[in-house]
Image 1 (spheres, rainbow, N blue to C red):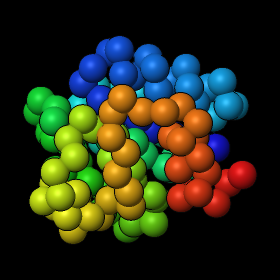
Image 2: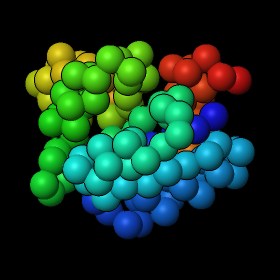
Image 3: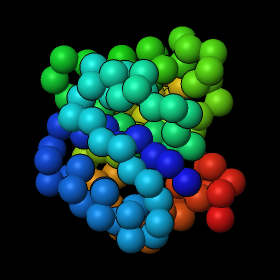
Length: 123
């Protein structure tokens, strides 16, 4: 499985990478939505899933999701929002933008990996 994880917090990016790589999941990282789009353009194949924060500089998670969903080749990639936010209206906004699911930080490593396996169908 290959995952792109986007978060402006270096600590969270490191925690996500350690969690996923321990499970054999290849992980690409980006620090905001703009860099996330740049990373997508450099990959030889689309990731199996994307994790994105909501609150980030330059391009936030909602804008990033919108941009990804505009691209036909990325339309089916599951996008999980990984954020400290838990407000219902933000969840609805993310869902409307095209997010697949929502995970609140701090995250439980086993639940994060389980959610990725569920949305990708990759055991």
